Length: 227
Image (cartoon, rainbow, N blue to C red; front, side, top):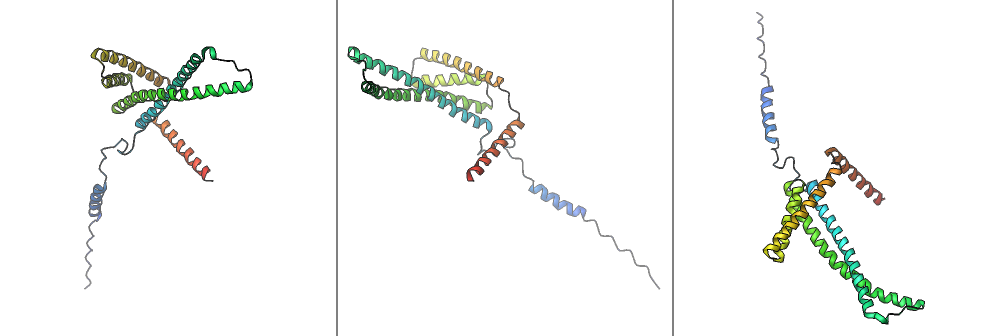
């Protein structure tokens, strides 16, 4: 007697079994959200902070250059006035080319050192003043994450107060210095705000494209120099 074979039991679907471990593995390997999400890594500076550092270097150099130039001119004038005061009636007008060359050589020996010494001293002083002010303002800008007139006002107040305390001036003189410093800081902040309003602010896409173009130009320069 021929019997009919019982239908084989269908194997249970493996999909639920295979999905559960894969889902668990995926959950385990999914990185947790970084506490610095949306911010540059701790070891890297943001573009805003880097711009403040570049601004500090630029302002300090400009302050030194202006101070050096003004100081050099003052030194030359003081040296020439002292030279003619010492010569007085004994000053002679050169009659020959040799006498003219000797007179110019003597004046250069007097004027050039005066230009360098006076210019260097005033240039360093101006660089310290401008650099110190810019450093305080840059720190305030980075701390607040923006540039505004209020930052200039705070910078003028803090910087003038620090100078007054360092100089150990009287209370009344310190109050006057704070008033002058705060006023000048507000004017400086307003001027910077006016310049920012005149210059159109770049969009993130423009900044990204500019950064990419700079990188391309840098690599092309490296390739050309290697050839």
